[in-house]
Length: 440
Image 1: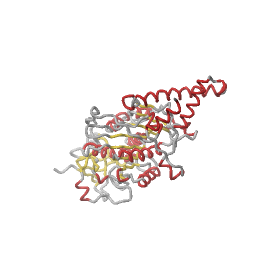
Image 2: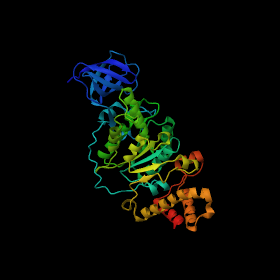
Image 3: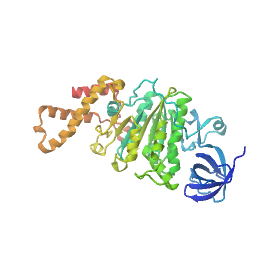
């Protein structure tokens, strides 16, 4: 059956309005302009009966008014398979690592799925025991355990070490678990993407990692789609190949920014907080797909940029609600030279329970948090009356807290080449023993 054709009527930046005289395309359907580039368009909404409002994914400026547009009959699809591993792709699964596209015969044989999927997938966790993945990073393994099939967020402002911490976790967890890693670079700096690629290459981790990049230089349409493309591949490996997947997303706030920019160019009225009107459903739809089922698990580590260091920002708060553990990086801690610059008081985890980490770890964490909270309140008193005026017990706890803060600082393996200082890796057992030596 031949599909109806459309005609380009309006060109406004990345928005292309196409008029159809017969069958209208579906939402999220791919259209192709009848030009030399076969420019891909994505149907964003349907307007006034016969107008399809489309997004110019590739940002192609050669489209002209009156150009003919043909329907594809399918949504934006990405090829799925082992061939995607070890490479870097854009939102449309085109290679951006300087290597050639996969041969046509290979692509033709590969399974393809739309990146827009329904959210009502079977994601039962009932049959899966909680399995802790050790990161080798003392402060994280102790306060915010990394549990297979759950979601962890690294929250912080600009320049406090979110990407470096992510790189260290990819290095440590991916090496130790042998799991397949998928990385989604959403709206971050090109330099950071390049550094990550080089780090994975040097540590022989590229062979088990597929990377999707929609960096700062890309248009907002690509940046808003890149996470969906990466998740679609993760779902394939989980469901079809029954594998456990590590999914790293840097940066989830940039996804919201990209969606914001897209809704602005299609003239949607923003919500009260200044964000796009569909922010809640967009984030929920994305996060609900980062789930586990009886086939396998997707363990997600996401970074969340905090605009102007304001953790009360509605978008930041909303993403945090979707996470099992939240690691907060603080500028104040970073200024003290402590790396990773984790604000222990502000970080939290619903996974720090006796059932998951065991009685010993849980009781230790309660004691350590009590000592560190006491330290915060004592700091103000010491500033006024001095340390010598404290009771013996208070002074003892104050010194224990200082030792603990120093203990939780450690050197990273991924920074070894830059700093010349060897990286550290600590098992959870080592970490618990070290803490017991300080506080017992």
